[in-house]
Length: 231
Image 1 (tube, rainbow, N blue to C red):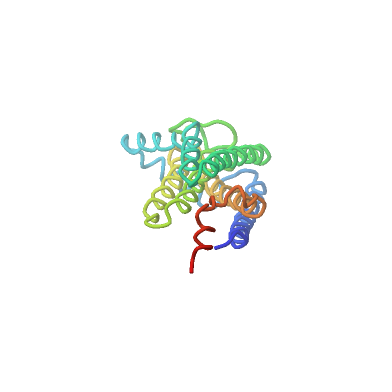
Image 2: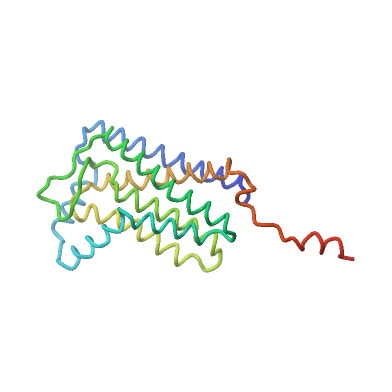
């Protein structure tokens, strides 16, 4: 797949996700932040099914979706992606930049929508700020997407199990926010859609405008010589 095809595919996926996110945002705003279709049922089930072991697991997992851990993961993924020092440094710079910009944009949307969280009596974990879209969900989904992209580039063979594991981690971090009672399910859904949309934008921009000389493999200096001496 060439760069044009990648840009078109990423742009289409990003546009679709942004459109769905925009519709969901308008519905949330239109209902003045009130719970939507599946929100109350998901929260009620979560509150009623909280054994100590499950709570401890959810709290531990949700903690990996914020703070320094996502940045460490995307930097390491960037360093492992390239085959040359230039490529590794570029990927290790662009990946956290994409993550940080996405977090900043999400924060702006959160302030604009200003959706209240579920009642404090349902909380079994720490949370702050408004509810939509979920910050932990967005950060974990962005991180998972960037790591999966790195795996796809660096390990084209046998990558499926590892990509599935990373994808499951990103999804489960979001679900823990509902299980811990600090977010509605539609907050998590909004975080997933936001992350897919932002990843699509970043990948499309990189494929279209990043100079080819920065991502191209180093030429084999012996290649031309071999061509000239070939009978």
